[in-house]
Image (cartoon, rainbow over all chains, first blue to last red; front, side, top):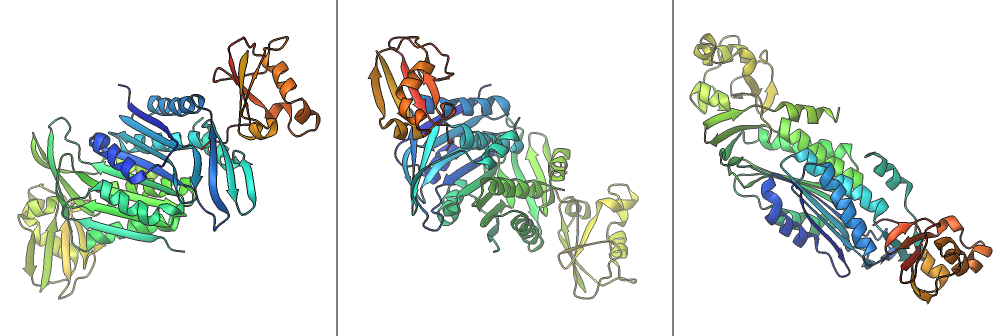
Length: 151
Length: 151
Length: 81
Length: 81
């Protein structure tokens, strides 16, 4: 049976506690829920905000494709992928992923896999603004290495 | 720097959404938060409840030891381990673990490691009550296998 | 006197949750275990290996010496959470 | 006419977010890319490999044919989230 997917690209805020509460209420009875929340780190004042450029339609499709691949690959009952776009201030949540499964391992792996792919393959372009001005961020070598774990 | 640990054995309820909100508010700025929530599965009516027998003092110490080992092993800033004891009805949350870190991978691994150890090594004795009466549950082979991943 | 506690399946086997008892001759967990679980062991209801032990809330082996005032516990293998 | 969109660093390089243009002779992404980014490529501001492309929101290679009414986009490598 296909997992229930909730994939959203959000131009406004993302409240992880609210997202967690909604997901847990709807999907918690599966047995195991794993969540991941990522926050933009200020790096001791070096980063003021990120701007995530996005291509309406293509960016959502890339998130959806990653969620579907996770659901196909792991024995999960539900997966939520919420991702910010536009301006995200330091201290704000940029991404929330939650996976539900009857099995602890599948829930962990689905969330982990989805995050590794999102960090490398989401159709987003990240510009960092801070103490040293603004610059586009390239994919990091560490993210490419994380992604390789699944091949 | 030692991570902040919040380890609690709970005789009454455990609200995972409230636990998540508290942890995220206090620790989310680290950058990455991974949570795990485990719920007692009714197995289509086969299980009515679990009774988790515990030894006051020794059981808490076993949870604390697991949390400290996770904090020592992984680069995390905070770890929360909340575990029920006593009677836990089908559909209720039995365990909540959350880890915060600057690094996605460390947060995932700390939560995963803590759960694997809790499932095998927490000083608890589990009795399952349901359609087929009551019986003590032995550690599962799958849990022993999960635990071996960390050695 | 020592306080003896029972947890998990061993509470069922012993038919009780606690017991206050004098330290037996020899003063090891082994002797106490064999005395308390004599019937269950004789009837094969449990084996000696099934019976885990602690002294003052620290897991111990059967050769552990016990002293007056200690808290001893007998229990089945931890099932985990 | 085709609608051309720019994202990420390529919006900075092109100095714009969008452009409406007639389909060029030859009708491939390659020709359109080289025309739009002629100055930046000549000045070494970007290389042809840096410029990723899509047609109708699907990632494409430079030999992809484009037709009247298509939506083309040029962008830098995805940075991920």
